Length: 157
Ligand SMILES: *[C@@H]1O[C@H](CO)[C@@H](O)[C@H](O)[C@H]1NC(C)=O
Ligand SMILES: *[C@@H]1O[C@H](CO)[C@@H](O)[C@H](O)[C@H]1NC(C)=O
Ligand SMILES: *[C@@H]1O[C@H](CO)[C@@H](O)[C@H](O)[C@H]1NC(C)=O
Image: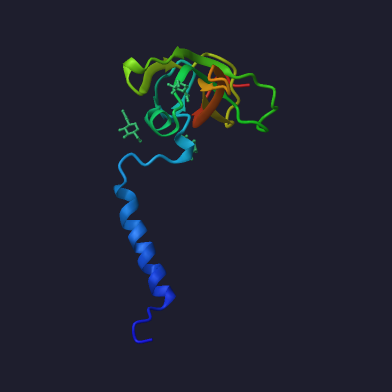
């Protein structure tokens, strides 16, 4: 029994080990990154404002074999917020080409649409991608992710 190590010490050791290993894993990809990692800059916007969208598909492509074919970007009100009847506002519809790299980056303007002041809005990104059917033929499905933005509209409703 001289060499017995209390379990708590062992688990502390395991924890310290895991903690020191994790940050060093190059390109660690959480599951939430499978449809892309979406960035919006700046996030405080008024109609007409210019902003930049960056979507990084490295994780989705390399870890999950999710390669976008089309990418649709919208301004949306999250479900169950406001009156629930506001249609998504299209920002851009783009075609993905692996030859341009894993990142889709572009600048756009906030459409002069109708916005509620103080409401939560998101930039929603939907990607259409192929998966292989049971007979090996591809078919297309849609997945998405979002990023929050604040919209201030001087003519808000
Ligand atoms: C895209 O994401 C990957 C993995 O997280 C990262 O290594 C890479 O630097 C990112 N690329 C850009 C252009 O931000
Ligand atoms: C579908 O099958 C093809 C041919 O086997 C393969 O190259 C491709 O990576 C597969 N696509 C997916 C999304 O699994
Ligand atoms: C939106 O505005 C609120 C209040 O100013 C702030 O706390 C929040 O971080 C902002 N959200 C974004 C995505 O900029």
